[in-house]
Image (cartoon, rainbow, N blue to C red):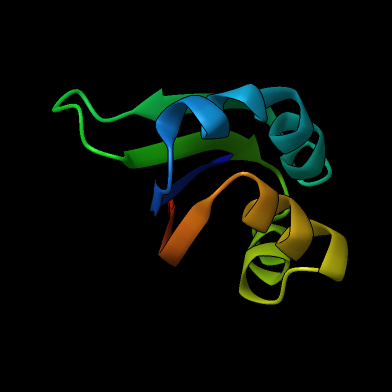
Length: 88
């Protein structure tokens, strides 16, 4: 199992945190142990970590998000760029 780390900025951290359950469900399609992290410096930078079995499926979901995932990201205030790290 590999660790997935996603980083990006958000328009409003509190708004983003309210979407935790929706985010966990969406990422749960490819991973488990979905955890949200906020920057300790008080900025609007955030990260999500998850354990993934299928790295290719995780990368595909993030590289070409479905219309539903893209709408979810927009409603949570995700600001590009979104950077993804995969444990190898």
